[in-house]
Length: 393
Ligand code: ADP
Ligand code: MG
Image (cartoon, rainbow, N blue to C red; front, side, top):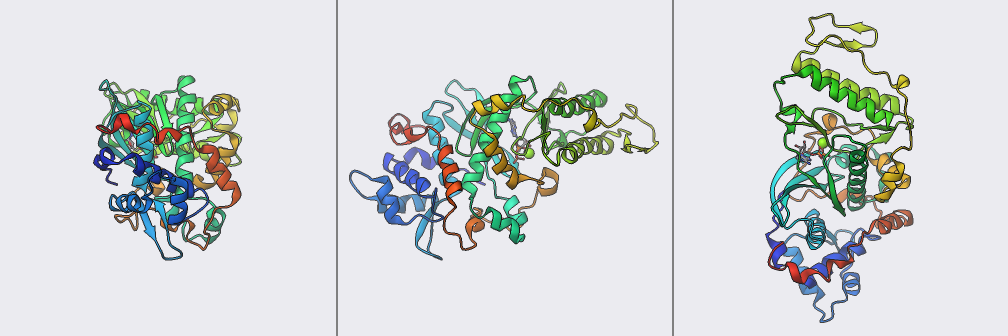
């Protein structure tokens, strides 16, 4: 998705007030009626409707009158709110090129005032998962009380919390810098996704390191759940960094063993195919062909000494609790990069998951609204800090 941040420079204090008002209205409205936007924005000189026209022109808002007349944020509008908040906080001051398109995210380079380049991940939950499941009526009904805005925010918060906790426990992950709404700022990993690497100097060592990580995660009570060549970065010195954490689960999850085995299998399969690693097809059979690095056993989930709850305190410190974990797990369970990647079946310009609440549910349930409220971070400053950023981002 294109992210043209130019308009950001020209948006006024009023524009952001109105954008924020629509966001607040969306807490319990699928589409926010113009009068409600006006009431929430409470512009001292009036003119909400004119401002909304400007926001529509810049594609920050979407107008819909199919069910009733109202407005909602577009991805771009939500991006702008998050970017503005982070710029106001001094986290970065410029947005650069796009460096990644994940299955449910867009990743850009951003630059700090002193020229340091960081990575910005904008979560787009609902982009593929939603489409992949929209035919499953039961699934949809259960989730109709949430929207992409809420789920993307939750995914970002989870990613940020896990990244922080994992780094504190010496896992090779990017450094988590900040988080707002659906946006996570982290250090830029030098290197490439393993899927792009055709040759390795030491495939055996890299393989051991990666399998060692799956095991050590389990020892810390966690399973990545999407641990594969797309989510492992490797640099020229063959140093590994793992990324992409919104789907991580606890080893006490009812399907923990299955997810653990699946992560392990992904790595074995990839190394077998790409680097001719000869490994056992399953626990009691081996392929018998010549081996570069021997025939390592698959780590067994049951024999790993697992400590649950080790990271819980650290996760909670970042605002991510079991409640949020339950919520997001219901949505993300089962989806993996390999299964879902490239699944943008009906992608078009306006790729908002508009149908998310499109089953006759005009409002989310109270619980969802409360959850969303509790996730409203300390960004009330959106409206009061514009002054100092009008010339730059
Ligand atoms: P998704 O959840 O959508 O799969 P990822 O977190 O896996 O998103 O990121 C998608 C791609 O963006 C990665 O494969 C990688 O190429 C790039 N990327 C993500 N995070 C970083 C980072 N911190 N530094 C450099 N590149 C990154
Ligand atoms: Mg990924």
